[in-house]
Length: 210
Image (cartoon, rainbow, N blue to C red; front, side):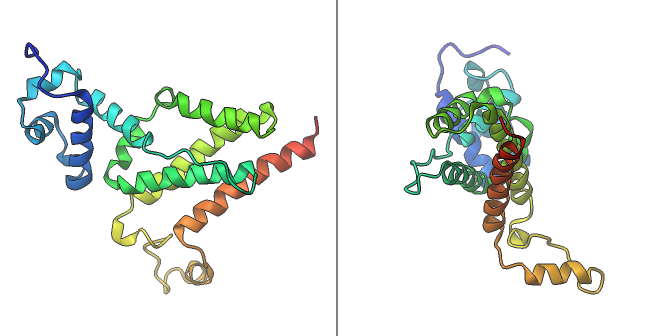
């Protein structure tokens, strides 16, 4: 498709508009035509910046992920507290853009966020975490955080507070008992899963020795 001679919008404005549409109207409402309408331009104006819808969604993914705030160094001095805070900050961002969860799942190749992995690796090195553990920690944390967070985000908002939303006491008595005995919120469960993972990696490394 031919592009107009001068760009009428910026790439950043288009990405922000795409996120606004997805947040307010849902992913199914998003299209280049809808984005052009939102920005008050003609659809060809978008082709100054993007080759197709997929490229827009890739940039939407990058923009959402980069909303994640890098934590300050914790007063505790415990690197695991920092890693946990990073994971929870990402969780907060994803749940703020709940409608974009399928986009994150589909369009989040690691090369979009290599700088974030580098920053985390630098911090781990500065805190004395053995370099041999960095890949295991970063790879596992990414998969755990994405899995837990996207699963929660893709639930209907009305059911998001319940870990298992469709439990019926008559059909699922044991699971019902477990839910009634669970004192943790979804956020607290996320925190416990991350802490368990981090401690497990360190413990296994200590047991295996140098």
